Length: 283
Image: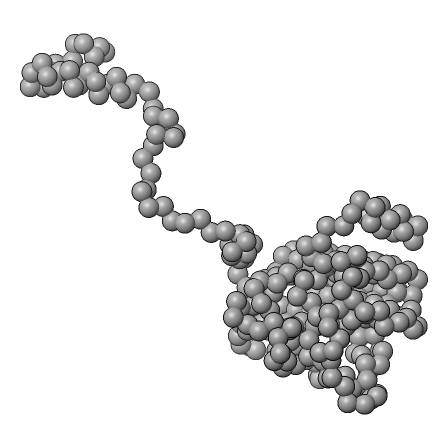
């Protein structure tokens, strides 16, 4: 094998010197930080600016999952404005209205992270212009035998949503976005219902009847009524009267377990966590 000194010159002494310099230069690979880079790299996508980039999944709508035996766990991005032809969707029972999200298991737990797609220019529920009831995102998450945990995240400004979270035998935990504005109806026959410090601080307590606790999160003056009425809640069988409310709603129910509601970005103190788990293990 020829050594660098014995390589024949190309055109003369100057060329030989250049060859030797080139060979010495490439004896070892260049360090990573010296590699040439694109002078105009594409800007990085911030997860805070674009949560969809972090989630790495495309939005869907009218999501229907009905498990006979097994848990439901995962992250789902819901775009309430996404049009999906009826021919591609599961059939509905007679008289049933299609929901944006329907998740149910007969035997197993549910632990889901729901991201609702909104728009930056969308008016929030706190604006003077009241949202239309048909604009609400309707969601149902339940288990017959198992715990239910639902985390609701908002991407930009979202339309109000109505969420039903229920379990026959198991605890129910719901995390709501800071934009939530509306009533909470929480029921547990053989357990208790509690709000985190953050949610409780923004709520008006409306009382407890038949194992059912009621709260209103946000500005109650935004609600308009037209008499006592006799309407009933479709989930818990409780009377809402004829309240004309098109904002957010949460109904959470369990027979044997505990109901807990907190903000999705809320960090509870160590004392609050210790108290929560102490009460949880005491039943």
